[in-house]
View 1 (cartoon, rainbow, N blue to C red):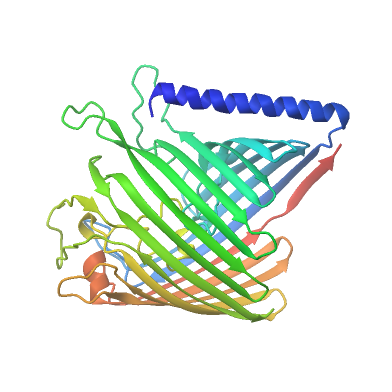
View 2: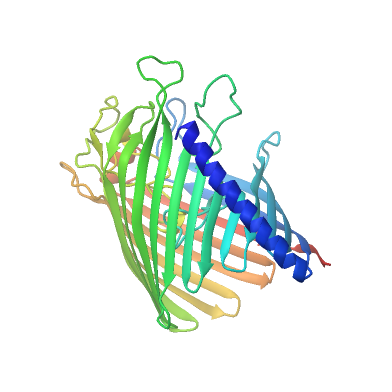
Length: 450
């Protein structure tokens, strides 16, 4: 995105805000605004223990296959609201118990939102975006630090229609004299334009969403003549459908990725990938139900597999591995997030097939439990190796002590295969075990109206 385009978009956004402010001022002149201010907290204590089957990530030194740690996260919420105006801020601190210093304090969210009576709105600031089932865009809150975006969002909501336009342009600093090179910033992209439309069919329990994203990533190396800085644009587009009744929910999604991909060396490559998913949730009663579904995420046409080491970084002209972008990954492909949190060997992706079935129930009031089985395999056919990556069983239970105290605990047991071991280079044929708990306390400290 060049400077002229950015100025044009900024002018459009500012003009929209001015129009909104004028509308709100006129409405406030005839009706006294009601102000509300609230202050609350969210305190998360999270502990994990795991062992066996972990990917080898250390190049040197001993490689332990077990880990135990505690995480503490504190969020302070400040909310202000009156007719036509909302302001929201979250200050967040996340730290491992025993970690020296306090390096994790940040502004997780901070935004203002103007709304008009006709359904138009404008929002600006740092926002935790979440759309549809959060497969492509979501806060990924299980990662404790979570994800938010510095954006301008404008749109319309009313009469079953929702239309959002989102714009972002990220930079490391003001850079008055050093250009606009962007690297190692708070966001994963240089610029982003997203358009989302959702429609709820009248008198019928069906919702349909359309999504288009244009994502610009920093390519090239600053000051490098052979690989000069540039911006590579990647497109994501697709649809999500949700049909729901009292006892049945059917969901389906299909997305494609095209454009240019930036690798670890800031070099460009083409991307041509896709994914599809279906899921059914059936609830025969209010206290019992089960879920089954299937995910397919495309992979590279050819994935070279070696045993016991690397053979450099071979390049492929077209990248066929689908990337879930900025979604809540642990919600879909197993809560261990074994496949898209860490890379496969040599930079190739075999894709993923995930067939799952689960049971859930509420045997006691405020107490919920579930059990889910995942069969995991590659999307790409491998030479001399079976596609099966492994089998995973996830057990989870939660109890709500009160409206602001919540406890959840989970245990996952994964049995990997030789294929997993060869692709991840990590003793994955052994049985991997992972247990964790999270205690969440969300007291409301102060609320006033005037």
